[in-house]
Length: 386
Image 1: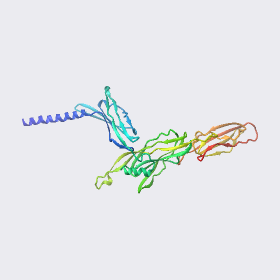
Image 2: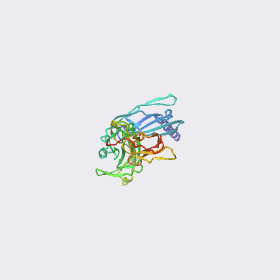
Image 3: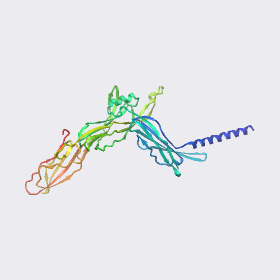
Image 4: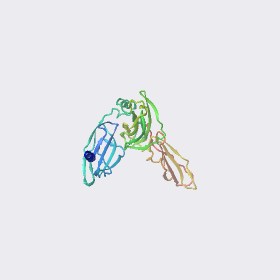
C-alpha cells in the first residue's frame, strides 16, 4: 500500500515536470533584442530577431533602423523541437550594426507576417550613441589619446590626402591607414565611401608592409589598407566621406590566475575615419585644355610604306586623367587628309599614384606627291602650378 502511494506521487511529479516543460515551451514568443542600450560612435551593436513557429518560415527580415547601418548579411540559425507530441520551430537572425552619428538611435518597430495570415509587431528599442571627441579628426596622436582616455581598444583608421587644394580634374591621392596597438586577428573594409564628385582609380597596395611608429611612448603599428587616385569632376568644396573597417582583436582576460597570459577572447570592433575636404579650383578661362596635371608628349618617327599613308604614333603620359583627353592638334593644317586612330589606354596603378598613357596613330594621306613635311603637334596642359 505504501509503495503504491509512492508510485502515484512519483507519477504525478513526472507529469508535472513534463507538463511544466510544455507550458514553458508555449511561453516562447517572437522577440527583438539588442546586446547594448548605450554605445560609442565607433562601436558595434548586435541585433537579434527570434521567430517562433508560424513566423519561423520567414526567409528574410528587414529591420527598420534609425542612425544605424547593418554590416553585411545576418547569421541565421534554426531549431526544431518535439516535446509531448508537439513540434516547435525557432529561427534566429543576428545582425551587426554601427552608428552613423552621435545621439539617439532606434531599432524597430518590426512588423512580422507569419503563416496563416498571422501578424505581430515587435516594439522598438532605443539606443544612445555617445559623442566621440576624436570622431572628426584624422590626427593619429589625438585619436589615440582619446581612445586611451575612454578605455577603448587602441585601433583606429586615418584618412590622409597628398594635397587638399587642386584644380578641377587634378589628381589627389587619398590613403586610409589602419593604426593599432592591439592583437588584430583579421580585418576587412566594411564601409566604402561614395565618391560621387570624383573620377576614381583604385591603386594597388598589396605590397605594403606594416610599419611601427611611436606615439606618446606607445608602439603603434600602421598599415595602409586602401589608396585611391581621385580626380575632381567639378570645382568647389568637395568631401571624401568616412571609410569604415571591421576588425577582430584578441583581448586578454584578467582573472588573477597565473594563466592570464594565455587566456583571452576575440571581440569585434568597428572603426571609421573622419571625412576629408578637398577644395577644387575652377579651370582658368582660355583655350581648351587636354588634361590637368604633369603630362609629357612623345612622338614617333613618321613612316610611309609602299606609297601608303604617312603613319605617326603620338602619346600623352603622366599624372593626369587622360581618359577624355583630345588628341594633340597640328599647329597648322597638314597637306592632305588625316585619320586619327585611338589606341588602348594604359593605367599604371602599382605605385603611390596613378599614371596614365594615352596613344593615337595618325594616318596622313598626302594630297601631292614628292617631299612631305609633317606639321608640329601641340597639346595644352594645365599644370598644378597653374
